[in-house]
Length: 628
Image (spheres, rainbow, N blue to C red):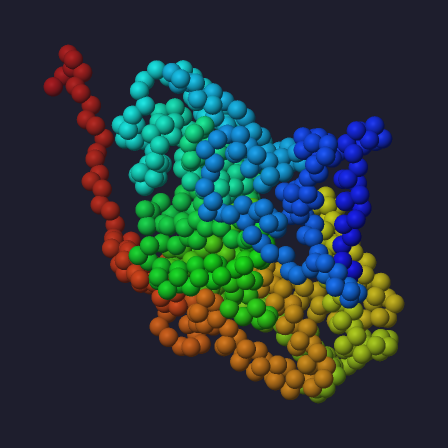
């Protein structure tokens, strides 16, 4: 790759400003650059590095000098602060005391001429002696009404009282942050002059200011002060609480997470109203620092699980993580495995139930899903609706789900093995009817199954991508037309259409969306093995899959636990037991408190009759003047 050519930019910017103004219209950046040259004087030119570095070098890193070799390019881009230039701000650098210097620093750091979304508003504090101040915020990320009523109005209103250290006793976000504010003026502004209900924190360094601004907060700078104040006024547009899309149920709550992490934490706290529910807040990503929350129950979740999840998240060093699915790929135990090792769900009730069993949950800002770990293979096959139904119905639903999983994985492979290698295993009449149905088909069974698999994947993916108004119609009509036309054309046999239809329906019974994809890939492996070696290939693939599943772990917990390895376990593993017998939490999570409920819940006898003393009809009072 040839080095980037900077000559056109240099020639453009070396033209005299009057000539540039007369010849063509200028962009805002060119106007600013021309003004800088005029201020520098007619005989003194600004160096190229001093003009380019604050604005352009972040987006176009300058290559190294050409050493004569073709294709010489620069080294890797270094992430330093919030820019790639040498003028990038050090995170630990102090804040200038003058507003003019602060404004120049913000102009260089955020390139305000090309970034008008950043607003710098000068205000005068309502003190006996007027003090200038500067409010800095991103217009698209703050609540204008809250900013005007709760921050700006109290700051500019006249105040005649003394500013003293006693203001430190006023309400504040935390005692530690109060003691960290060195200036009595900033302390008074934080405690007396504002009515903001959000967090108010000091910003001692430039890095803290940048971090607060990019997260939608408001920074207040006061003339002569070496610290700034942060006010929470973020208002990022987003959805409300809606119904689940991928985990819909008939019986149970109909609410799902949205893209706001604060709203998602509120949904969990509404279900686990306990002071032991802890929500650690952190940031992940170098370029886009995305907020995440590590959630667990203190005194219940094993500390080793919390430390391990925290260690894996803090080890992530990437530009940005846009969704919880990316985060799950960074922290999972076996990235190359077919099956997932975490549960990604959009249901708050499911996350709350997992937290109550000693698991760890992770929420990511701007992602409507939660990550839960550790999990087992058996829990991925469970639906939250199982617990809301009576235990016979829940147990029956789980049995159907296990059978559907086996059908999805093995049925196409068994059909290939029996028809191609072991037709004698079929009853005579069924063998003859199957052979008669395949008489007109010129292709082998493997080609038929691959064709139907490809057609089903097309219908499934098109049903997801096309608009909802016509999605179901296209899916149903497309499947019917393709199947009927393929049978009439002699491309596939009718028996195989029935088998693949049952397989396609069985895969949608699996409640976990990630497990659904893994099961579909495993089905293709069994199809290939059966086409090569028949039933022996299916047995060999099953053995390899069993060894593979035994090695998988979820946050250090075996995926097949507590079945393999066999150990003591809770009452709810594979089948759904009666609710009164579920007294123990899952042992694979190693909870600190293993008891879920009291062993004796029904201390009353339902067969005992409640004796009610029957009262006769009220006696009629004697009529006056009647005979005795």
